Image (cartoon, rainbow, N blue to C red):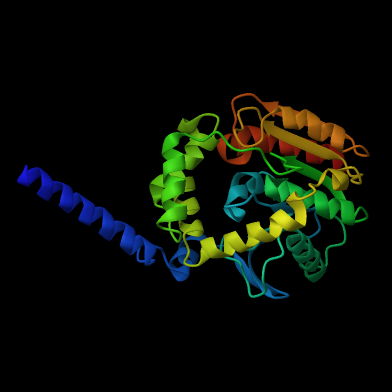
Length: 319
């Protein structure tokens, strides 16, 4: 019995040490470490208002302009495959919008409306008057808000996994909820790499499509010191700024042509919301493509097929 008790005590001590060092931030990669691996060519950093933005601006300067807005908890790496499929003809501008990725902002977050204002400053600084927007998840909501506010600027919207109201609770596994509880209760400054592998696997339609590279950049860019506090500030602002009323009213004002690419196995935004979104864009022509075995990230899970569909649509509407 003494041996068992001693063993249990050692295990408890080891767990306490691990959690304690995680809580102290000793496991987090530094900003400079992440920058060295993620901000490679053709990345630049540009000062826009109070923000310092990690950005990639690629493709012919005379080509039609496409701006890409990533989802929450991701960054501009989400668009690697789609950008590669477009930049021979189109000028593609993508950036990490704060609080995500390598971008920073010294001003307090105001949620999605603040990103709309930031996008206004980005395109003005770039000298871009007319452009299409590619966006996914919360980035799609931001794109909808922007298009409703600037119908004269937005030539087309290509959206995936679009929430026009606060998403319903996600049916994660017990393991995921245990990891989330541990983070929120005991280790608010850190998630291990295993968490990102598990969460992405549950958000994919086919987990075997998840690559180690995606897990690595997800882990690195989301565990930069101070990142979780900035995300919490953003979410609290967002609940008041957007999710209290939703964005369906804004969707009804959009007049630009729209492509919706929807993963039918999305556990965050079920496929029934796709048909609902089509009716909410009352003043726009909407083309809807379903991917039966894809989850929340079409551009990551099925990059070649979804990029082909996106390119064909843009070649048709941006003549």
